[in-house]
Image 1 (cartoon, rainbow, N blue to C red):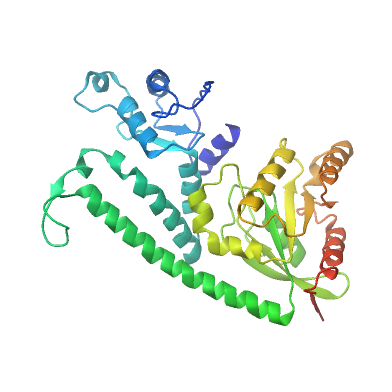
Image 2: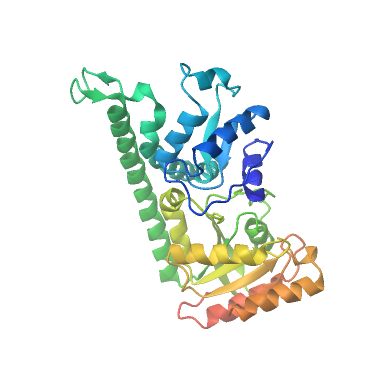
Length: 364
C-alpha cells in the first residue's frame, strides 16, 4: 500500500485515505463485495477524493460493476445523495503503472510500447463505458445499421494495436541485427536488471563516467535501453546495458509491449542484478526480480548481485543481507554507485565471470 502511494505520487496524486479488507476470496463481481463498495463510496466522498485506486488488478466486469455502485446513474436516488466529484475515477494498480510509463516515455520507441499496452488494456474495458457505447448507427465505414459504437471503437483500437505491433516488430529486427553484429565482433553484454529506483542508471553512469546518462531518484526514470562500453580491469571491454526496472505485479500488457526492450536482457551473457540495500524489504524485492526474470525466460542466465547503497546501512546489516543472498546461491558484491565505492571489485567479478564463458569480451 505504501508503494502504491509512491506510485500515485509519481503522477502528482496525494493519498488522502486508505482502506484494507480481509476476506476469504475475492468477490467475482466487484472484488470487494457490494457492501464494501458502498462503504468506500461514502469514504471517498467524506475525504473529497477524486480517485479510488485498487492495489489489485480489476477485471473489466469488476470495474464496470464498481462504477455502477460507486458512480450511480444521475437518475437514481443514490446519485442524488452522492457527494463525489463528477470526474471521479476508479483505477487499478496495473493502470497506475501504465500511466507512469506513459508520463516517463521520452523516445519514440518507449512511447509506442506504452501506447500498445494502454490500447490493449482499453479494449476489454470498452463495455463499461456506458450507454454511449451501445448506440447503433449506420453509414459509410460501418458494418451495417446494427453496428454499435462499441463495435466501431473496438475495431479502431484493434487496428491501432496491429499498426503499433508492426512498428515495434521493425524495432525488434533492428535490435536483433545490432546484437548479431556485437556477437560477430566478440563483444559480451552485461545487462543491469533490478527493481525500479534501485540505482541501475546511477551505476551505469558511475561505471562509464558518462554524465549524460539520465539518473533520477524516482520510480521508472528509465524506460529505454542505454548501452555503454565499459573498460574492465584486465584491459578488455564489455557492453553494459541499462533496462527498464521491475516492480511487484508488473502488468502483463507492459511486459508484452516492452518485448523489444526486454529481449536485451535475454541476449546478455551476464546479468548484474542491482538491489537497493537500504530498502526495508530488500529480500522481498529480490524475490520479485528473480520471479520476473523467470517469467521472461531469463532466470538461467549467469548473474551477479550488486548490493547497492551499502553506505546507507550499518556493517551488521550489510553482512546479514549479503549472507542471506549467498545462502540462496548468489554471488554478492557490495557497492555504492552514488559514492563510486566498490566499483573496481564489481568489475573484477564481472571480468572473472565473462572469462569463464565462451563469448569472451573484446580485448584492446
